[in-house]
Length: 182
Image (cartoon, rainbow, N blue to C red; front, side):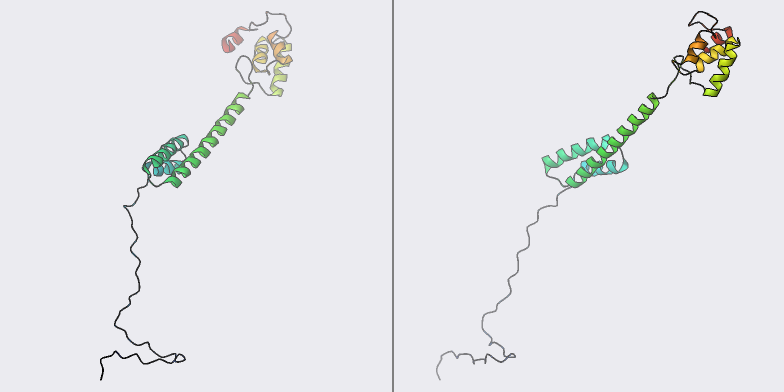
């Protein structure tokens, strides 16, 4: 007998149950090396605050804190850019809403008409009744007509002239009118 290594017994190629002969080398599947993670990144507290303030509808405060958050994220590399943007968007929407609302309120408030004396005009039926009383010589009715007529109207001028009696324009027709309206 010789000391030559024996060659493995050949395995027929068409045998599906054939096993490969054992070898002296053990082959292990390669394992991927674990990923290199650094410490977890922190989320910017300003970003969280901006988003919460935006949800609460604080408007300009959410916008200010959102811009501070964006600056913080840019300088420090923290997470939270999406939350900061959400806070900015909600803050700008809320600010725009309240701005439009208050402009509308002020426009409606500025549109109300008052007479030069600061009193609200009376309904047309009441103005007509006061006109008739003033024309009949009721001087207090003339003062009321002047105060309660629409500004610049013929009724206002008639009341100011004390029903056409030629009193001094700009003076009250009656002592009671002077006391009440003057």
